[in-house]
Image (cartoon, one colour):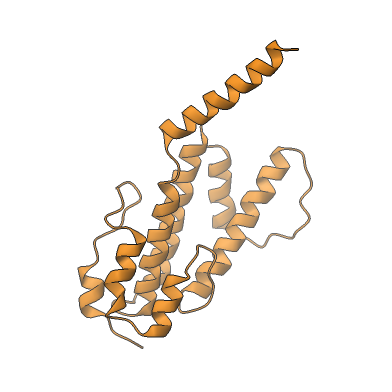
Length: 173
């Protein structure tokens, strides 16, 4: 197993309530000289549902189950059937329950992001300078990238635009 003493110790801390300290491409650039070609390829192709590699298999399984449980609950709330069997553990179901009762979609996303960071922290526990830590950091960066897609101002502007369109259609009837 590779050791990345300098690389990992030089990475800035990641927090759910703080801006991204670096972009994913900047992270990849930092990794380029310190990791093998195989590890770099995994990092380059990493998505939130990746499940190949140390830590990623456990993460991918948990993330898929969390997404399925969330989809199931959303469909139930809409009164629609859900075909798949969901195998989420009780703590994940409890977290999804809190998410479903969040006051708004942004608050729900923040709850999920905190839970995802906590789960990644549990997977990285007892690892310090190895692939587990590196992949955990990479997934957290991907989560923060996803978080930054949700901008309240942009969302409000898009809602207003869509709502204005609906109002115009109603007025033309």
